[in-house]
Image 1 (cartoon, helix red, strand yellow):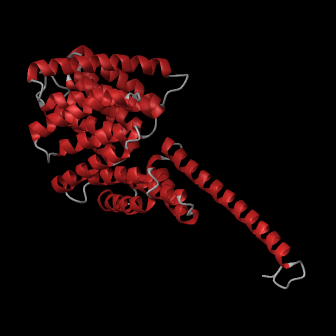
Image 2 (image 1 turned 90 degrees about the vertical axis):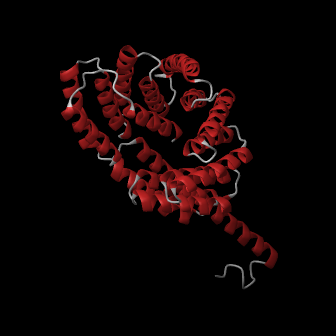
Image 3 (image 1 turned 90 degrees about the horizontal axis):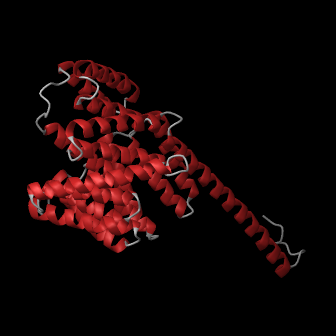
Length: 379
C-alpha cells in the first residue's frame, strides 16, 4: 500500500538521523527492538509481540515513560497487533506513541509524521462507522493542521524544491486521498513529483513512487488513461532501478492490471496479474500475504469473465495462505471466505440459469418438431 511505503521511507529516514536525546534505552533494548522488527518482517507475529513487550518494558524502566525510545517500542508493538488484525489494540499504542513524540520532539518532527501515518492506516482498516466516525474525523483535522505546519516549516528552512518538502507534500496529499478529497490531493502529488524529478532525476525510485501515487488518485477519479500512462512510466523506472523481479515492480504490475480490469480489458489484465504473482512467489515465497493478494486478483479476474471453475482454486489457495499466516479470525481471512461465498453463489445462479435455458430450449424444440418427433426427449 502507498501509505505503508511512505511510512517505511520515513522510518528509514528517522533511524538514520542522529539521536536528539543523549540518553537511550540501552543496548539490550536496541537488540530486542531490532528483533521485534525482524519478526514482523518474517510474519512471526506471536513471538514478535512477546519480544516487543519486553523491549517496551526495558525502555520504560531505563529512560522513563515519556522518552522517544518508548514511542519507538510502542510503534513496533502496535505494528505487530496491526498485522494480526488487532486494530483496537494497535490504535491505543499508536496514539500513546504519537502523544509522546509530540511532547518530546515537537509537532513538526518527522517521527510525528510516522505516528500520524500509522494511525491513518489503522483507522482506514477499521473504516468509518457510527462508533468511530467522530474521533476519526477529529484525528484527520488535527493531522491536517500538523502536516500543513510541517510543510510550511520545511519550505522555509530548506527551500521549496527540497526532497524533504516533497515528502511532506506526499504525506499531506495522502491524508486528503484517504478522506476521498482527490481534487485536493492531486496538485500536492503533482508538486511532489515535480520536485523529485528536478532534485533527484527523472529515473529515481522516489519519482516512481510519486508517479504511482498520482496514478492512484487518477484511478479513483475514473481517469484510467491518465493513470495507465503514469503507472507504465513508474514501472519502467522501477524495473531499471530495482530489477525486474523486485516486489515494488510487482506492486506496479498489480496496479496496472487493475486499471485494465476496471475497464473490462480482461485479456490485457491477465498476463500482468500473472507476472505480478510470479514475481511475488519467487521473491517472497509461496505463502506470503502478497501472494495471497495476487491469487485473489486472478480469481476475481476469472470470476468477472464467468469462468467460475478457473477462479475457484485461486480463491481457495488465497484463503489457505491467509489462514496459515494470519489465523482464522483475521479480517483478510473473512474477506477471502466472502470471495468464495460470492463465487459459489455466482456458480449457483449460473447453474440455475443454464437449467432454465435448457428447459426453454426443450420446450421450443418440442413446439417446433412436435412431441412425437424422435429427437424430442432424446439424449
